[in-house]
Length: 130
Image 1 (cartoon, rainbow, N blue to C red):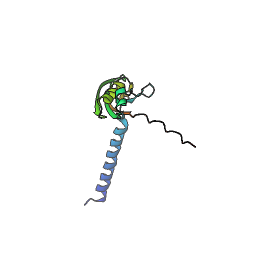
Image 2: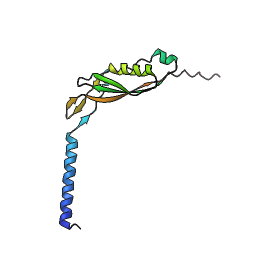
Image 3: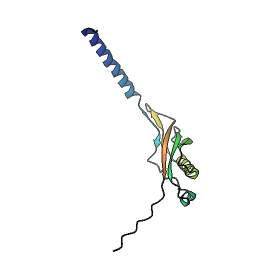
Image 4: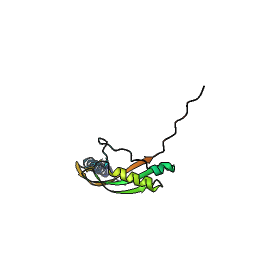
């Protein structure tokens, strides 16, 4: 059983430990790479063959972003299920510019994931006739 003095020392030690941990989190700020929204990043072209066959889906592309904001390596982390859509997504995101990752104000190369959605256009709904 702890006496009052021991409990107080334990409480102060715990508060100090929390303060140190909190300080290190605040100092070590890090942001992941992301799409540079100040530059154009058009939707990758929808392949004609995919549209003709009614293919649609979502592709998750992992992009390795260099410190200059350009995409380096890419890999499909989640396929749409259609090779032509996956290829179009990869080719599209390779041309985009990114904001590189930062840690304590310094840029560094790192991976990010980009989501590309291919959805067939919906036919227009006819106006009701009177």
